[in-house]
Length: 200
Length: 200
Image 1 (cartoon, each protein chain N blue to C red):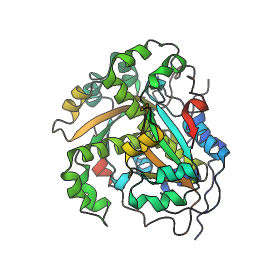
Image 2 (cartoon, each protein chain N blue to C red; image 1 turned 60 degrees about the vertical axis):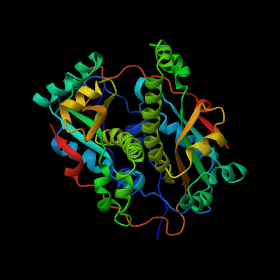
Image 3 (cartoon, rainbow over the protein chains, first blue to last red; image 1 turned 90 degrees about the horizontal axis):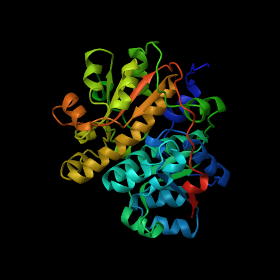
Image 4 (spheres, rainbow over the protein chains, first blue to last red; image 1 turned 120 degrees about the horizontal axis):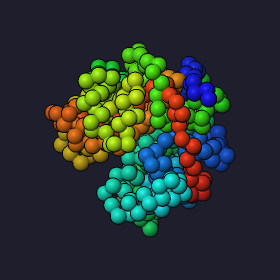
């Protein structure tokens, strides 16, 4: 069994990490349903604890759905969201454990463990859905599209609007599209290596 | 200004997402300090809200540091962690806002906003450090290495051991190395598209 792994080449590193930027404006170029479907079909493969996969995705298109979304965005994010050809609402499924027998077939009883422990269930949903949001942002970029992730919205209002039964809770809203005019600001500095990394 | 973006090719998609697997055993092949440094130097570029960058990384090597770590891992994770040539403790910096004037130079006053609002500061640290943990896992894979992320450890014990002043709080431990013998289990199922994605 060959288990040797390759390294990501410079072009791919540029596309996902070193050259990629958060877009603040979007072109009219459409984003297709197939592209949005493929973004999830790529992001879904990255790992979660207990294979829990608690992230849920609502793709919002221009029209009534987007109008319902925009009113819950902070003022500074409304124009950007209105200019994006597609927007993803990322949410955690507070009842993700219902799927445990299907996704963790060798340990189906973990469903009941989660059902009996609200704090553990909520911590697992929040942590792993957020990990998956990171994967999702890079998966958008992998499709030649710019992502515009935004934490600036009213989660209670958005959740009442889109998730009235309370099962899903929004964690991030991500504009998706091709970059428009002057799509990005000057690159902001990253912390120095020594501010982040230590050795033990 | 050319703002057109390319798509990630099949080889890179395989390396990061579709073909990558969580490793459960590691070969003796070393992982160099340069590789560990480069992993962070790639992951750091992916976005965080307000450019907050709250993730901190402690690279742990075989020896006394790893012995101090292994005793806080759950039983099922100890052998894996002992077999990895490098391990990363990922933590959130609860005082990440001290860096705001440096990383968000056009809005230095946000440092004081965070200082005055414990709930907002903690939510920002937790959410964004977790996003960055997702980027980190993919950055490990980008270097031709297998990642073994683990939530199964005693965070209170680990934090008392490695972060006694209380500023950093562990969120994830990630084994890093080249795959060993029989390094992965059969692939676990992913949720169906309709279980995850809806349209509005």
